[in-house]
Length: 388
Image 1: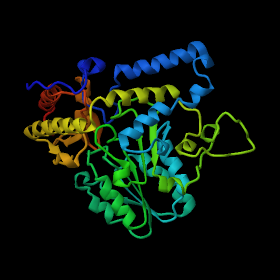
Image 2: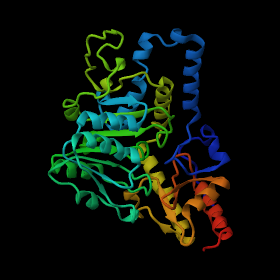
Image 3: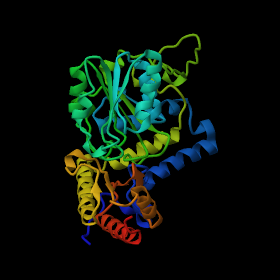
Image 4: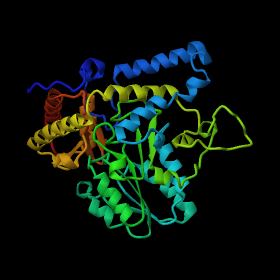
């Protein structure tokens, strides 16, 4: 095996030595410093209540996460909100926009990327158009999306990186496609934030969301929500509450005055410990440039692809690293890829079953040795289960 140290201390990710953990596209391991930050916060609340979290501290509870997210995606802090999930953020956005023209997405998207638009379309009469890719996910491209976009399109909402195959779309090209037809470009960055550079200002996208518990190595219960200033000025929140006002401690039920920036979309009390955990995870990740994380992801998935080729696998992910996130998905002729994934998991190589295939997703705590061990175990699994 070729020696290859991880980009971060493995001691901060104890499970990485217990398992061959190649499943960050599902749930990433969290660094111990982030876990400790959450425990410290919760301990303070449980032991001292508002002594630990007074009114000023609660106002500032989301500031750290918001600040680190802004740096990560090239946004102003006032254009970023922290919420509980991507689903919540996309639902807020869909109901605030209420598009009347058609909405374009993809049939193999994670369902929550599509469902909010389907629900709003029932009220607005909009048409939801889905690029058909389920029969041949490997062939999906920007050109297929472009075929469904026209001058009646209101919204193009897709993922930066497809969760099933790892296909990485160019954000600037997506924005250009949408804007050429007067449509909004809304992007789910869940499978790219933290592992692929994505400058929201430079690329010109109109809105973005991402959850914390995947490539950002954060906890459940936290996500970020970005809206470009030009779109923000046109929207009124569909969901409102005490936190989203200009002074959250006024408690004036007779007067709804929104916060002047994206804080108006932080409408309710949420898991503050999750926000603290996200902030600490982002602080931890900031020690390694995203470009370096990107390069390591390409390196590790290239190594996987070479080994999978030798095992006779069919690669579903793009072969060109520039068009791929840190995801490598493969099928095995004559075998059920989801059963292969289940057996790998049983043997300590942690992966995901997706669309009849096996998905590997290494992150910055992984090494060449992890990849080589995964391929070794995979060869054993395939030998133990002859092709049908």
